[in-house]
Image 1: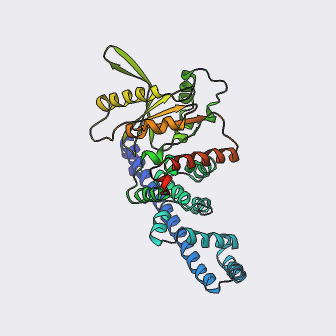
Image 2 (image 1 turned 60 degrees about the vertical axis):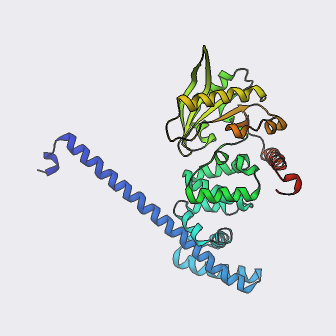
Image 3 (image 1 turned 135 degrees about the horizontal axis):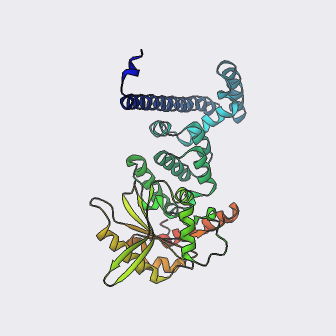
Length: 352
């Protein structure tokens, strides 16, 4: 009789479960190691090919090199070394020339991830998607959706001067720590809620709860839902916060208040009250101070500037119930970025 059959059923099941975990864990580790080695190989090939192309200084000669090399490699090693993929490898080295940075990316990102990133035009945009993808473990599909919905242009960080963007991305690479500027967006695209003529904040709230998984995908990785209509008793009055989340990477509570209309100055005082109450009664020792998001249908730029909301840990963002055509979204976000940078200190003196 098999010795395993002599074990009690409960112990047998525990043993089987533990061995399965070991097998799956090892398989995953092997797959990651193979992926990292393969992507690093592509980077090294790209660097070597680029050296020959740069020496020639002739575009036509570079094409001849790729065609000739590809034909030989495909015959010997398969279609992974096609002319197009060799082009991708050379581009990979051109946009990520630092071997140390490339090695870090190779450990987490697949070749399918990198092929989507390397052809983005803006270097800061490329670095944003590469680092966020690495830190938040996006799938290739999720990365494509975020690029398509212009996530970078919708984050608060894109509205900063380029030097500050680069500095914050370097800190993300070094410490793997997300900041509110990397997490918060404007606008949020809530087309999945199916809202048509919304007349009630409770309807929006109910729709978010109904589509919580899609909502969490839009607001970003790391959010954990805690409460709806969080009750706060202050003196003889009760207040109710629409939605309360916790962000694991930022290690802080995130309060969300929903507004059907445009942002009003009184909304700031209300959110400050919520955040101060949460700081005193809900935040745990060692956590960062709570922050708030006011989701509204519209906002006025000068009001936002003069209220200095960031000092109170408040982010005001609009939401779209329908995803705009890409050209329209591009125009809207480009205008928002230009306006935000003009308002930065030193902008009028040419400091941005």
